[in-house]
Image 1: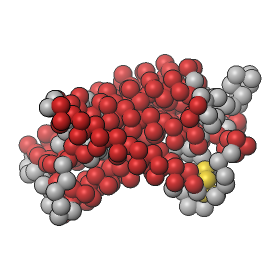
Image 2 (image 1 turned 45 degrees about the vertical axis):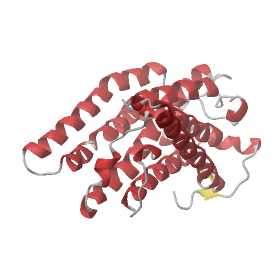
Image 3 (image 1 turned 60 degrees about the vertical axis):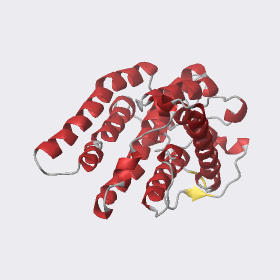
Length: 283
């Protein structure tokens, strides 16, 4: 990403950076010429996806179960073969297959199938502000919303709604075991999830139903995909913020930065010699 960032003001004129790669022959009609108009906070334009919702659905149906099942299977295999003694570490190492399948889905059914460049997934040049201040704003709102939600759920005494992602178990891992945890949970997972849910899914949805509705639907799917009742609301909110970053800038880098920062902050706080309720953190 070095050498690709320019400190340009985020003006409507600069939305041309959201334009799709035209070298693939796409954009022959006015509708597919290059831009999707957003609404309200999603006012900046992002490019029309060259793939369809059908491509996203097929990729999800075929590969998501493989990723989940493969991750569980690899984790169990690591334990049963004695390669890894700690169950939490085995689960973390096994989980590497899920982000791998997400990346594979976006690549196979998006980039490769339609013979387009990685620009179509949002790997585009963006401004310095877009990868610094905008992610910071989104991250601040997201973390605050998670903390308020957790406090409210605890105050109401509704245990099933209290966020619980098993972070206490991760906090119990020793120093050496935290290295792969930071790599997988802190870096690989956010990268893959943003490529799939924003660069692949949101782009397809926004091309059909517009930026705002696409953000709502993709954020709901993103939330449900985490398979955790307690995190449905906070992850939905964070999904909307990440969608805003993508639609606002036309680049996948800002949501990747915000998402990775969120996960890395949670993992780092868990390692600090202070008592922080895991419900207030989110990965």
